[in-house]
Image 1 (cartoon, rainbow, N blue to C red):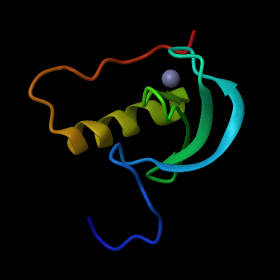
Image 2 (image 1 turned 60 degrees about the vertical axis):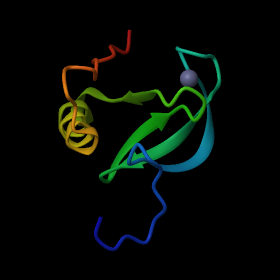
Image 3 (image 1 turned 90 degrees about the horizontal axis):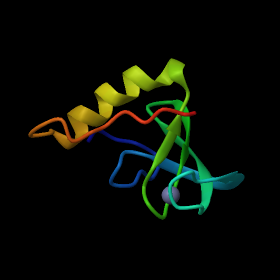
Image 4 (image 1 turned 90 degrees about the vertical axis):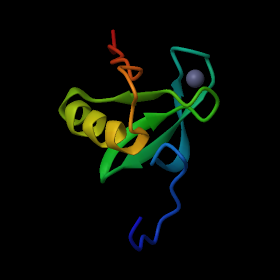
Length: 80
Ligand SMILES: [Zn+2]
């Protein structure tokens, strides 16, 4: 990666403060996070993410590139 001033974790997420939102997957508290200058909610426990539809496609493409998938192991998660 090029020079960045922020600390990002292995999912490419810059994790900020915890929110009052609860992870739909594991019920842990979600944190605010930023990926590629887009705001997301990130679960530090199960590493799940909640992403707005506006940010979803560009982020998925970024994350796919990050993980270099061998198959289609990155499943979209609806926010319903
Ligand atoms: Zn979770």
